[in-house]
Image 1 (cartoon, protein in one colour):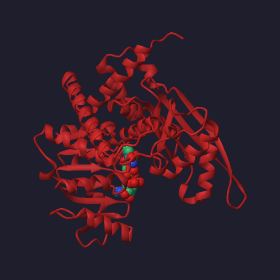
Image 2 (cartoon, rainbow, N blue to C red):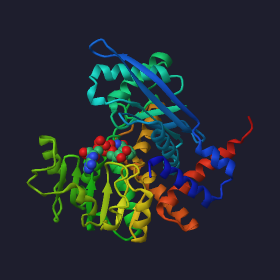
Image 3 (tube, rainbow, N blue to C red):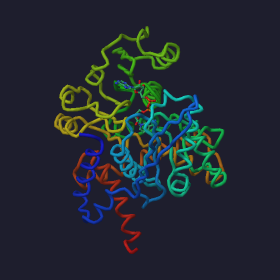
Image 4 (cartoon, protein in one colour):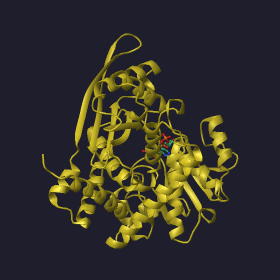
Length: 411
Ligand code: NAD
């Protein structure tokens, strides 16, 4: 099942549990606005090339819409739609005053030079500048984009609207980016997991962890787990996988990865087949790479007792059912990886205040938001007798539905 179908299914189930009126349900499902633009740029050799850019603005009842912009060859309107909707529920679960959006350009970023990427970003911004804004829609980096992309959007947008640092988040710190943003999603994953484990009378230092993906989210999560005394017994990325039943020295593995560009040949662990990572013996499995990795084929073989969904949509609904029958507890993506958008919110707040927080304050506030959201989700699990995924969906959907109803329907 693709991401859109799975998101719609979870939304409909939450709407049923909440007893939402069909008019509200329909209005919450349909995006507020879908934008599709043609972006033509001269390549470095003088030839012209065109790309299609999308921005889906899903819902703004709780505040400006918020979500990443990705540069990827498979950016398609259906997926962007699902991801925009997920952002609406995610910002509501985290209780930050935003709605949801997502966008992207269908391109292969590694085939473009830096100056071509800059031209493409500027043309895309020219096409959408009057539809985004500090109080309308605030983009952020996603797959294939980074803080430099945000710096170009900020600069291009400011030509039309005056200096507006809060129009994007995930900016370089020199342009108003927040301290702690780089680590925020991985750190939020760890705070979320600590709240879950505490509920089960457990703590990180007593448990073993397997982590799929060693990029931004996976490497920060691994580093923080290691610092807190947890044993990371297996790690994988696109280059391979390594295992050590006594725990991997994550700082040494990070240095090895930095020096060689790969995980293999690390002296502190044995090589293993990447496919085995998900079914490796551990207490907590943390997928931090791709969507759909837990599916009907491998769900029965998962040995972890807890799964913390750091990646977006790592568990397809069939696997969800199999895992739930096995008693595996899943911390869902719309909550577990909300640390990134939460610190993006702090960045926006700092830009609007014109006042910069130190990193300790960012981390303390992040912990507060993640812990509070966990207890809010648990409250709904209790009142609706449902699992954590439905607890999170009902929490998010209910907050958005309430805001929509309070605003009223009159034209
Ligand atoms: P990233 O590009 O920094 O890292 C991705 C990692 O996955 C890399 O280590 C890559 O080698 C690995 N990978 C790719 N294919 C793999 C495979 N087949 N097997 C094992 N590993 C593989 O990306 P990221 O920012 O760390 O994001 C990871 C996930 O978290 C994505 O699903 C993303 O949507 C989600 N997410 C990220 C953020 C954020 O702030 N970065 C926020 C919310 C959700």
